[in-house]
Image (cartoon, rainbow over all chains, first blue to last red; front, top):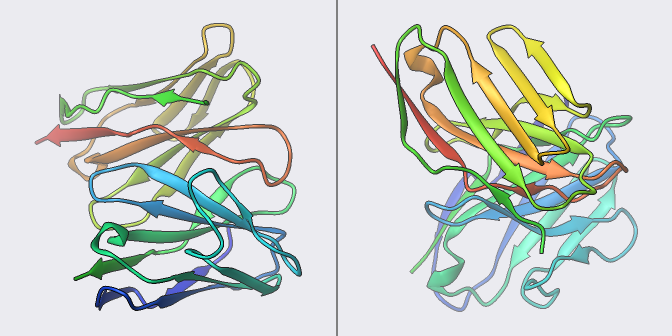
Length: 114
Length: 112
């Protein structure tokens, strides 16, 4: 499986600011995804990061709040904009390997908003 | 609305026993099924995938799928304290980039 890294691993931010999370994969992958895991909850898909085009967002998530970039097949960023305490979560990127429907997750970014 | 249901637990089993984790799903069109293990403070780790009815074995893990009953399970034989974690069931389609729907997870505790 691919080796996935995320930066930062954790951060504490002030209300109203924005944070950009980076996801780097060690090989080219077609599909990359961003998930959120709120405290004590399961995973919720935020969006599919599409290379060279706008991300595909799930219901309840909008581009203005969670802009996503995917400039190439190994890298993506997720920005959490105008943060509030409700955005405190773990944010995870995942990749789907070629010729498989399996998804593998990065180590996650633990975000706390004060 | 696609739903994946799991008993939140905790499921407590003694060391060496078989742990049985269950998952039901609502979308009859689902074609791919996954079990992830998540240790506290860590990201989910894929441990099993299954696509056809029946059993699939990998070491101490066996995944069982019954599409007619919309049911998928994970058996862990010879459970070890290191198996103590939350187990997430995820369900998806059969094309690249298919969205996974996750269950709420079952917390497993294996007692020495």
